[in-house]
Image (cartoon, rainbow, N blue to C red; front, side, top):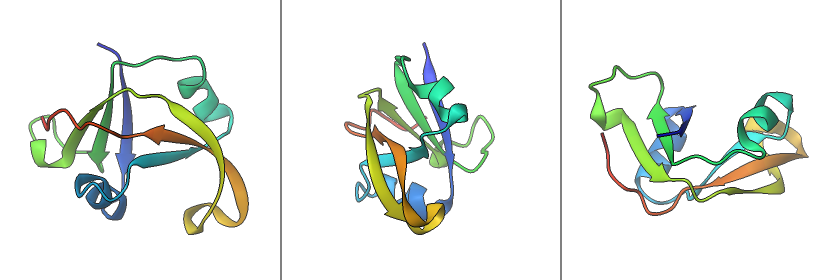
Length: 96
């Protein structure tokens, strides 16, 4: 099984866990291009920081639903609009 693993800060992890945030953003740069463009995954693993393998409270798993490229303005990326991969987070399967 192929999984894209994303490590998040508590603020964003909590929003996703509460179903208030349905996309996770990663900059369109060489690092993320290599990991996202042209790739297909079975699942997306959203982790709160870097939890131990048995810490299920800090792990959310979603099926891979793809991504779109968007221009957004967000404090985390600065004041100017940037292109990001907006990774779809829908239909949470389970927590491990």
